[in-house]
Length: 237
Image 1 (cartoon, helix red, strand yellow):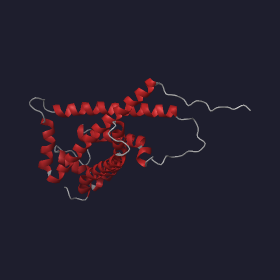
Image 2: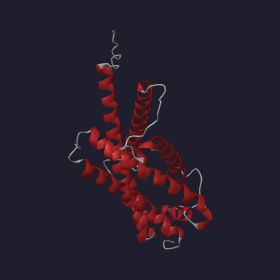
Image 3: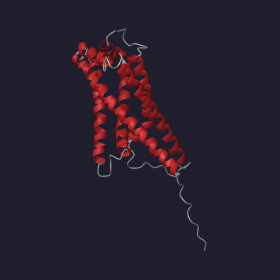
Image 4: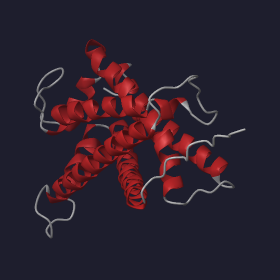
């Protein structure tokens, strides 16, 4: 009786494996850079609770940070360049990894199953990334280039911020809420994956890393939503 053996499993070229690892490292490092930035940005937003003078002084301190070694606005421009490069690296790496995963996946499945370890955050990473990209563009146009203004024209960053989260501008608050929810889900999965990629997490530490990622995500969501909510209800005015 003749027997037939199963076809050998497809192998991944060594160069492709190395490139995939490099892309994952690029995503991890650029992602953690953004996490550090948004944590500092969240801290700055809480200055709004101290009033207009304190918040505007904080905004001005960012423009003069590093002077006279750096020119006026020098630190902010360095920050923008670094973050832009990190964003491009992060997005390009994500797209390339997604395309590689799509090519490696069989064309059809008899039964579509989800692994027990697949979280809702992991399944929505791509859509969350699109929402965040749109929000970043919106945020820059509103508060950096001031290409459009909500609630009027203001010289004070504090007044511009408070006006953006008044009841009549409910759509700004809604978009902000959706974007920060997407950020929390993205960070929750991203921090866990990044630490695994960088070999900081092993099987014994996965539970701790998972808790850390969840805490960072919750802190960002609550922290970013607290000032706008206070403005919406007139606590900050």
